[in-house]
Image (cartoon, rainbow, N blue to C red; front, side, top):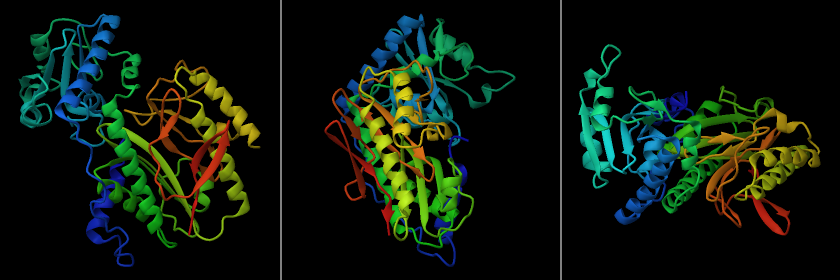
Length: 413
């Protein structure tokens, strides 16, 4: 499942019961985050107009008469984060569809359960025309949605999800989302700060004796208290950190070393962040591995300049690991890649046919057994911006070509 519903269920259950009789206050959270940014109506309209323009150019190139968007991330992208059509949390296909025709006109196709909430709320003032069907008329025996669509346009319509009377959108459609607008960036910066503060707040409350499921519940609750939805929750302690690269919580009890690794989203936009806590002095081998992983991540952070080939970055990372003294570690876990409106828009691999775009987010996650460094960044023409960074977390300062790249260190308690 894309959404970790089990983790959310644990969090809700723990909130009610106080985690356990032995740990009654571990999970207590209140709304901690700053209020989400609110774009002015004029700014939102300008952002939406730019994205509609991208769609129109895409339609012309692909010989389409319209584009129908039903995936939640695409609805969020097109509406500048205003419309939320996700009812079932483990599904990315939303409960309503937005249609943009090549003349720029905008249409909402949905049943009565969604129409009022969307037309009166998130889509109000955005110029959408409502096309309604009854919920019981969209079923395997008779699906009227194709008729409704044909009533709007008889042309060739590309769709990001199965929908009668449409053709699948090509994979290159997702590239329309890669380059962030000013509005995207404003929301993403807020999201990155809130997700990181949530993870680090949990790390500071950790104590030996807590179980992985409890830490998972703490993390989910902290994120939800800020209005964020966790889509990845990887929690591990002690030996399990080195043993498993994707360490789902399994109930082990924390003694000295803990990892909290999340992907969290709002407005269809995910960010990725990982932090570690160690109780007592760091073993020298662990410190050495972390510092070398941090240096690899700094290399990744310096690499994504607009126009750079992702295939070249992939080949270069092999050299970075070899220089660190761990030439085979890159083979043991994917190295990350582009993020933004998907948990990973793509992961880099040999021969990948992608190039870095300006204002494109990336989340690299190099690992050397027992350690990992993971932040979310945005690539600009002359620098990268780390959106998952706070002011009071310990850092490792890596110098490359006269520039300092601060990498998250292990919090020692």
